[in-house]
Length: 95
Image (tube, rainbow, N blue to C red; front, side):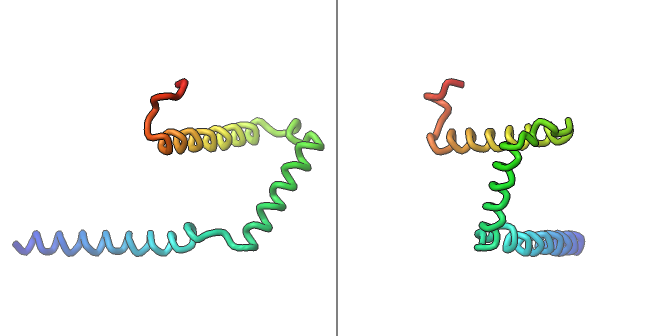
């Protein structure tokens, strides 16, 4: 019986430590954006528009192009997954 109690105590400490760490990060990462975050987003969009207009995208390295393609594919994937979840099924989509 002592072995089970020690194992349960060790497991509880391990799980509670992980939960506390997760909650610490959740408070920071899952917080809604503040005004300073929105200002940074507007500046970022402005930089993207400037880069598109000056054809800076044409001088991207292969690594940058690959990363940008993967980011775009991830955004599209999450969008379509959200659409399927919102609709409730895959039926009705041209998959």
